[in-house]
Length: 120
Image 1 (cartoon, helix red, strand yellow):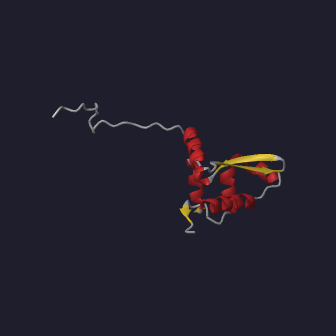
Image 2 (image 1 turned 135 degrees about the vertical axis):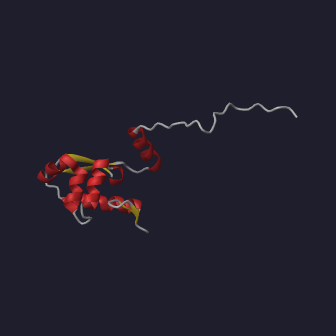
């Protein structure tokens, strides 16, 4: 029997790494899932932008875990960050952001505050 050519393979003990770029990862997620990673909310002629809760940064995620789940103002403050006061001054209400969270949860069948399936 003739010897078969073998592909050069590195030993299993040699690890390879995978590199991810956050912005590319976000775009790939949006393209593949068809779901947004960011919310734009227009209020009083101004556009306020914040990430979908599943894409909150570490600080937002930590802050969200520290507040009561019923603290709607706290959740809105965490989502909007530095934009919160301007949002309120433009006539926005924390409940508006809660409604966005609800709409996103209904779309995904996921509790966006807890990140758990809703069981629908």
